[in-house]
Amino acid sequence: MLDGRFAPKKEEIDILLQALKQYIHGESILENEHVSVEISVENKSSSSLFKKTNYVVSIMVVFKTTEIMFLELQKAAYNYLLKFKQEKIGKVTATWFVCSEQGGIYLYEVLAVKEYRKYLTMTNRFIVINSLSGTVSFGPGHMYNHEISEKIHKLLETYRLAQKNKWLNEMFSIFDVCKQIL
Image (cartoon, rainbow, N blue to C red; front, side, top):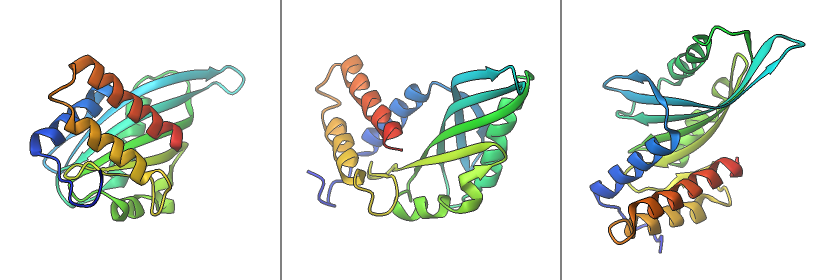
């Protein structure tokens, strides 16, 4: 039960981040002492009328410090799409899984400002995961914060007892639900 006293072990948090990394199954676009970023293109569609390509992407960010340089991350994600050199970039829908030891509602509020919600043609949606506690935030007071956090905590508790593939599939299902909530 999620009651504020639950604190996953370090190895459980590593397992959570590794599961998310496998779920995103992306390409590293930025790695330094402050942040790690991976991106995966989930869907690409072309509009022959406007000669633009629309994208749906998932992005995993792991902040290693308290420094939040989100403008730089947005640019890196957008520049990654530019490398495809097809037609012009049309609409981009980006789901950001933001992980941080200081993550939670306050980090969500830092990211949910107007400047970060949209970058050029990219619309950003945020799922913030506290990598120390495993709690999830879709925003302050969001009705699914507690429910999804508790599901993740229960899965982390059963990691050693479950078959790896079955456990990963259940975790991937939770990540899918997170994206649907947005």
